[in-house]
Length: 92
Ligand SMILES: [Zn+2]
Image (cartoon, rainbow, N blue to C red; front, top):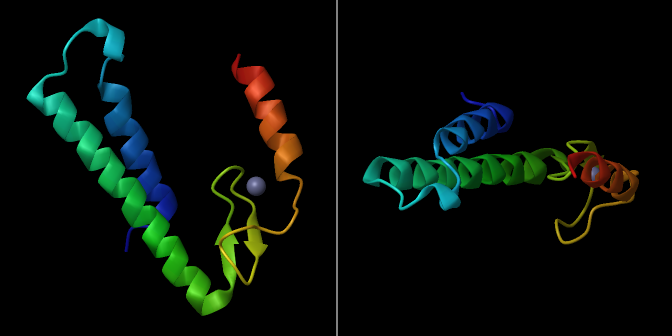
């Protein structure tokens, strides 16, 4: 079975094949890759949710830390905000 992480890697690969929107109109192939990438991400989320229903554990979609939670609305604090802020600063 493909793991959510592997699905997301594949989604990334597809998205990386598509030139930025500023490069001009997308071809049919490029639109298809983006749709496929979105579908792969949805599948990854669904797998993680099924896993969470079984185990109560889910990886944070922002930082990847696996946390134990009783609701998917809010995740328990795990230092995510700090890491996100750091990631955003390095990206720009
Ligand atoms: Zn997090």
